Length: 166
Image (cartoon, rainbow, N blue to C red; front, side, top):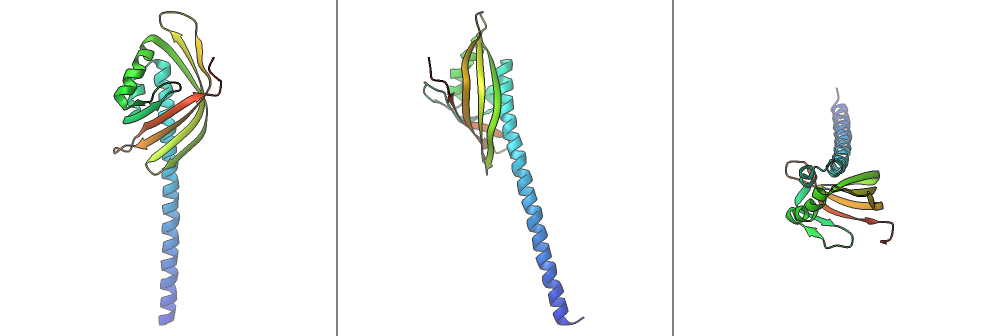
């Protein structure tokens, strides 16, 4: 075989190898992003499970140690301890029922992810009393952060209602 034929064959092999590496790399990145989106959606699902079953330990475990919860009409709760102090009494005194109607967006940007969802929240006093629809038409934007072990935790959570307060 001539030297020019070897050069052509080598060039074709190098280009083909580069295309294959790029193709497999792209699929791996896309698959990884899809797995991350699935993982952050699962954190949101577990959030609802924790709320609906009254499992405060599950619910608080979903938060990053330096997480920030930003409820409407109240100061931000900064850090897991403030979140715990602010939310544990509600779990203790109320049966909570959250329904996540839809996840409008779920995206991942490196080690950060977000969900934007709509929901309804009902509360019933454990001591007895009527169920109150606390958030009839709620919306939330939640930012997640990948932890050093690869898991996702809630870093920021802000939520409010489309219905004006009474």
